[in-house]
Image 1: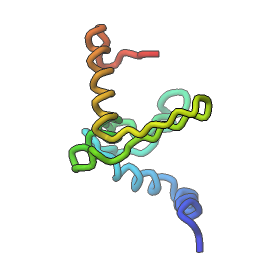
Image 2 (image 1 turned 30 degrees about the vertical axis):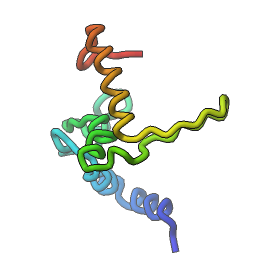
Image 3 (image 1 turned 60 degrees about the vertical axis):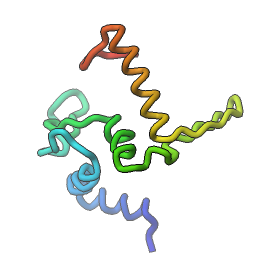
Image 4 (image 1 turned 90 degrees about the horizontal axis):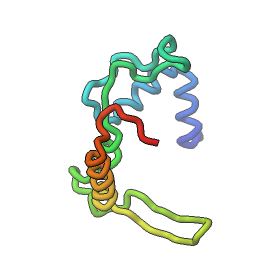
Length: 115
């Protein structure tokens, strides 16, 4: 019997577009994808070229909205310092909002690159 990794790999190998279309169905989209991959766009191609989503909404917001805000979202475990910390979805979202507010105060907006 195959484990989850081998099953996923076999599904991808069998039909890559169907595999990624199914995976994309688990994401909340503002504009759902019509195409999965466009090899002619850009140097390396472009995934979900017409689609629009928000990473924070998928990683944090939707879990808070569904009532999972007090559950662990991130486990920080530094091998260098030995520091360990758990962040709940609520805490992580609060940190993201604080950083977003600072960026807005600095005049950084949608489409700007921050390094």
